[in-house]
Image (tube, rainbow, N blue to C red; front, side):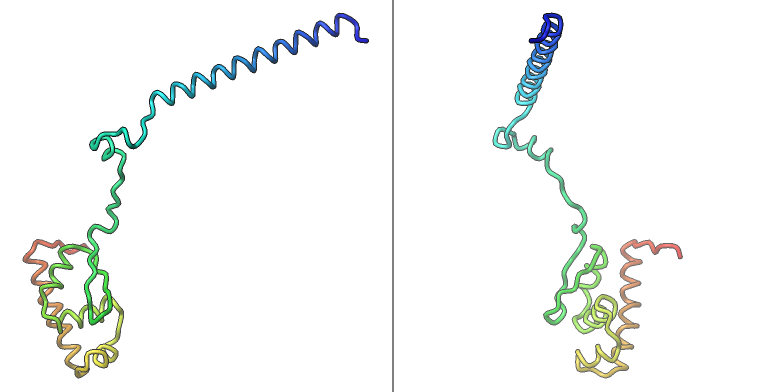
Length: 144
């Protein structure tokens, strides 16, 4: 049997541990209650509050998908997409195949069933038209 001094110290330490655990438990319960009082379920939110929690991804807002003979071509930029959609189909196809799908003049001529030189001429004239349209619309060219 332990002497009374050791037993008393052990009992005091046990009582101290129980008190610390009870206090910590009370703190945790109060913290949970405080958080629960501050939280709302999504069903309780007003339309305005719900809109404040939303995040709108702006990454794809200025991307347009143009159809080029069944192939989807993604064009970035509203002004460029508008300019391309205003072009006649033959000219637009040459630009999309050349610059957006990376095809060579030979591949484009085979795909569109036109002469190789026609592809080159169409691209040059279309680029000139696009440049004039973009300048008229106020597009500023980046410095080199």
